[in-house]
Length: 115
Length: 111
Image (cartoon, rainbow over all chains, first blue to last red; front, side, top):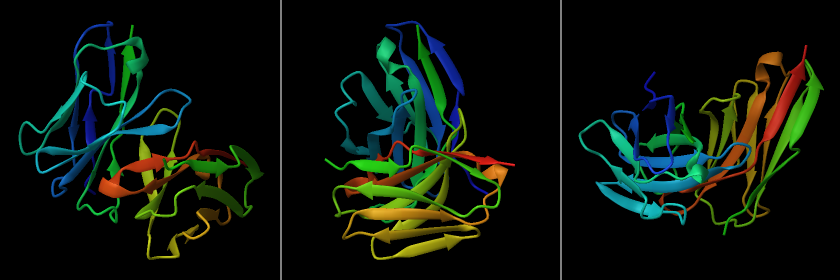
């Protein structure tokens, strides 16, 4: 069964360093998303992406964050200069169409630890 | 802003019981509602999706209902098993598929 994959499963970095989290969405999906979950808190929306553009972003997704689909399969989240409060589980998701009526499939997550 | 609340926060039941998890949301203008399961330290597994025009969905021992006008959804689990132990998350989507999540109900099914 097709699934969303994410690498790495765990990333440890020093404050101020850049990190890139990678995702491979389900192959025929067109809509891509990043969410994060700080330990013990709700899953929060970061950004949605369609047709090589950001569709919507939350107030969390500031200038330190960027997303890219560098080729036909990968979808990346870059954090330019990590802060301690960026420590969280980051989930990638994809869906095959928009309009809010279609199921999102989530990857297993990348646990980011900023020291 | 959409707020999603899940009650109870935690639930412990003996194996075999039928149980109901509750989800409420403040803005009824949703496109769909999705129930997920999350095991400790793991990702989100989709259980059921209910589109805004639907009232319920069933998958095996799971049944989810949606009442948009009252801003409520329930997840019914029949004949619970220890393997059902996990955190169950409810999420509602609006424009651009942006999901708002609840805090989850942590379920423990005792053998």
